[in-house]
Image (cartoon, rainbow, N blue to C red; front, side, top):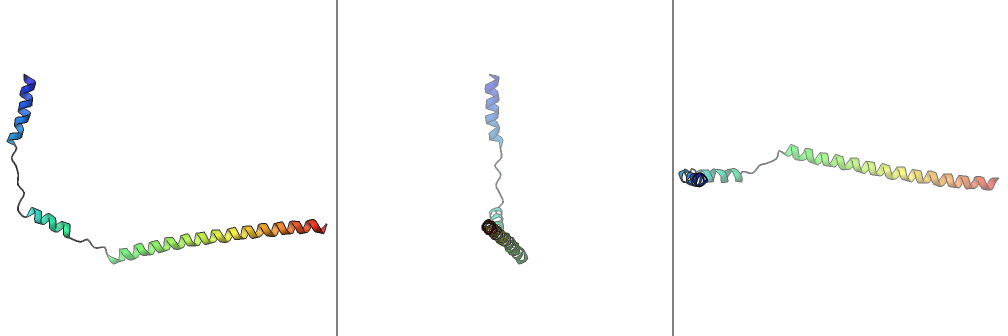
Length: 91
């Protein structure tokens, strides 16, 4: 019995809730805030562009240095193999 009374009290408590209506200008105020366009200062755009360019330049330089280093290693290996084979024939 107590359980049923408790359940009924909970259900009846929703009848006492007062419905609150928003003010008339609230919807218009929300819409105006949503329609405001946010702009980014041009110095931040240039800073981002310069950062991307700097990062790309560094990556290209590292790749080119790696390619050059690999070519030098191959040349050294080729010269060493030729030198060793010439020494064999001179004896």
